[in-house]
Length: 127
Length: 396
Image (cartoon, rainbow over all chains, first blue to last red):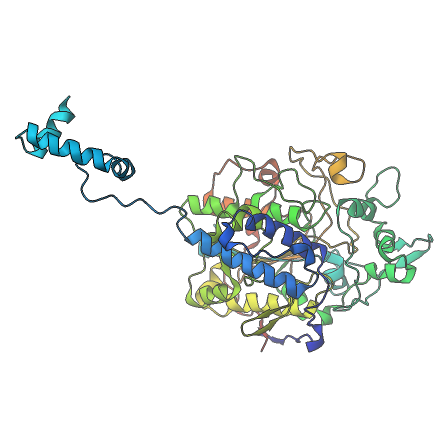
């Protein structure tokens, strides 16, 4: 088996201040396009036309790439939490909006009917 | 089925940036006449009409500055020269480069090529495994549309660096694999280099991506996906632990950094015995970067799209019926005979999803015309017994 020594580039090869190529300019535009779809809180507010060097471009690309991964892993909408056991089956938002009236009518209903709640629900379903 | 294919579980593609076949591997013709490289007499007229000849004077850095133009109109000039009859004669490279600096002597550097001793990694792999005489970029144009062919088998009508959008029913090779319960990943170098496939894949499917350190770990742990696509580092930049040198070989990045990177990808596979015997690694370049190659790109099956005269910038529409300039491509596996030279066949980047699809997914119909027509390359794993003489690279 041959072992082949691979020469290393000199330290002088590194140049973070090298002006960005048309490839990196394009990548910046594409990254910005993706960034604009992120929620405002995850946007960098970096003005990409002011990016002139590879080092600056890389820092912007790093931030947006990290944010893209992070935001993608975050649920976009939190599932609603239901308020206790809903007796009527309506969603909490409607229930919350009508809390006072429901309380009154529930009380009135209790007076009108001596049947247990479970039986009343069953009756409604069979209609 | 040959034993190499029976054992094959992984395909890895490493796509580098912007170097032509003759520039990187053309000198190998002196060692092996089967390789369709340079005789040393190839020439282009300079802007004064005098012939400029290819020279073995390519340097690692500082020579191709400014970055040679490789957008559609420039490549059109490079391929057709001034020929009013539109014959692909590869006579317009020097003139094209002259337009950028208007310096006759400097424009001739576009014909310079490397000698094999300068590129020990690429030339060793080319001579130890299979080198393709006819692997062409998919479009006579720049990076983004060419890389699109590697991911989707089409660029959806795009011939430039502009954003393209996926059109149904075509899906990326990664999505095809995942949807069919196979495994697949794109490994970009790090988050500061990221990917060139931002708008369609990174934005919508970031879970498809990993980093190069993860690739190394996956190779070591034997957890590499069935299909992996590796992207190099596109920029010199700071990291938390120091600095990273661009290793994509895009001019004017240092070519030796790319050599180290190719060696690192190869070693990662080579050093895990189970992975080595079950993996095919393709090293290929996305396009020629405006640098000279002597082989005229052939006509190809049209893609069904038409780029308007306005989009091409040449005053002529383009029907995706001709390939781009030839690029270096090497297929590596211990099941490939040493010194394989693939001749008389035409490959392009659509050959990548075509090969992966044919091998892992078999009959998958929702593919572009170009991908369906593209040649595949796994038939090169012909040995009945695995080789044990494959080289290793010392990169420490």
